[in-house]
Picture 1 (cartoon, rainbow over the protein chains, first blue to last red):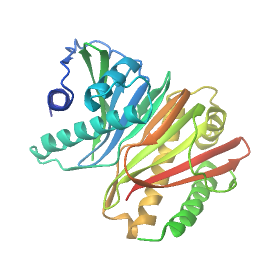
Picture 2: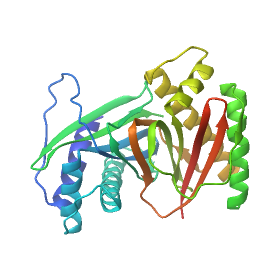
Picture 3: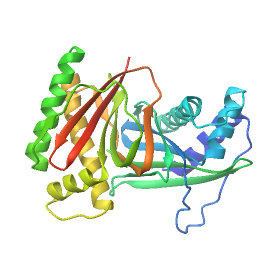
Length: 152
Length: 155
């Protein structure tokens, strides 16, 4: 299944319709997965035919830029507004993924989004799960959209 | 659906049960429920999402030394740093706690599904959910230190 494509499509759609910032998926060269050093990561659990966790990883500048664009006001610190905005984005990304999977007869349900803010934060899933990580470039900097999953 | 006080009570019971039965570690509830979780320092969080008739998440937050002690007990081998084994063990504990929470919330856990567990760790981080939720935060005490179990359920 083309999960990487679904992630790219979902992210492009959400950014084009809600945030109005030009982004581009970085082509995967088949090499090691490029790491993003996030200061803010939002995650949402997925359950059903696919069990997983979807996350967006943003360095400060990207998280602040997205929040500013979404709320239409200058946001300069990683506080409640930024957590809400990026949490909402991962929720929308999961909603798009749900629609794409439904078209392939895979039904998923969403948990609630949560956000981690900090220095040198790292997230991981179970070692048996498949990992898809798509880095995106934007005028604000790079960020990553990640899915870890198993088919149940 | 049980009342929140009942969920609280059963969550305490099932956490103690998992730690005594699976981790082989004696723990007890420490103090009152917390209203808010502060910044976590040098910690690791195991988290699992709930979807279906109840939407939410369960998270368990361990200071790193406690996580190492828990993993050593759980896997029966010494671990000295936060590595893949520790991440898997902490994720699995969140998964087991989530499994029990399912059965607490709904008869035999039908109609609720768990996501894949995930772990978060770092030198300093704050964890919060973005939904209108009812929240339970419980602190437990083990010989190696204390840790918290957090449940957030969408209203």
